[in-house]
Image 1 (cartoon, rainbow, N blue to C red):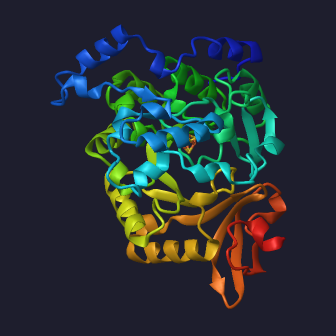
Image 2 (image 1 turned 90 degrees about the horizontal axis):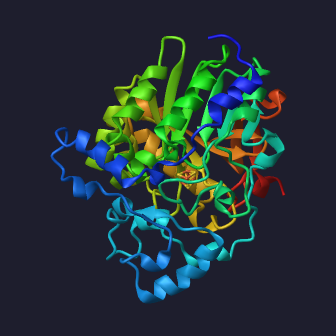
Image 3 (image 1 turned 90 degrees about the vertical axis):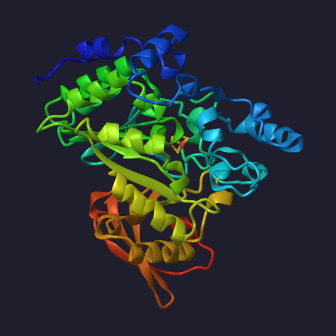
Length: 403
Ligand code: SF4
């Protein structure tokens, strides 16, 4: 499609911007009724209710609710009944519990809220341009749940205005930069936007000649697969935008094999029918997936359902994330043991530190050194550069190694 002007872009985007949670009960009922013949599951079981007040979560003790309410005054809590029902509440160390339920240690962490310094690569409101061919649009400030280890938790703070559902400014920038050929939609979770709004965003991005790929980063298949299963219109919209020369990639975020429920698998099946290409990425998380057995099962199952693993990220040292981080030497051992056991599909996974200077691959350890490589780099001169640093026990980030 041809070049479109800035004010036309604004018109395309500046329409409805409701998030899916705000659909009326009548609309929800209509969608569910249209699917009644497609699923044997009773519709009543598909009702998704969101919880933002930790004191209303049944599985927690009274003491926990009181203590954790202090944490959620700083870092918001959000989860829904589908995901909370996957938690084994009899196990205080349940890995899915660790993903969404706060812990007191979050308040005892002096780290930065933006360790990757995303503000330095923000070019217009909600648009980041760090690597030559990729721009990132922060299109949503809400998710199906809030992961406690989120490196963008700053977006969920009340006074943060970085994300924008109106992407007109970002589109204007992208249009003027022909070196950008792919866009990553992120936030927050783009699939929390209404289907109409997602359609508008995809339409306007693919209308730009030099944009061939749009990636949608989403944890909705893990947090609320019914958002996709119960919305055939969303699947049609995604299908409509896939062509020989324009393609949507859906980057899922499953952290643990127990998130791969039959509903999540159905959701992935449906996304595959849209012609999109699916891949998964996950951070390495203490007491969630810091075990080669867990990661091997996760990676193998992801290959089978059609969303093979792509990156394993070192947990970013974001404020409140300290209790989820694993030292780099331990992380590499877990990664390598996993990679040794999985098929070639999952062996493509790289263990990556998303640093302010670029995506740094942890290549290995030899003698007293750690070997690293710039897989992506903010400064193009660093692209592909191998480097060694003396290993410092306990280091969890590049900065720990060079201090
Ligand atoms: S789904 Fe992604 S953006 Fe949302 S809280 Fe989790 S890690 Fe952060």
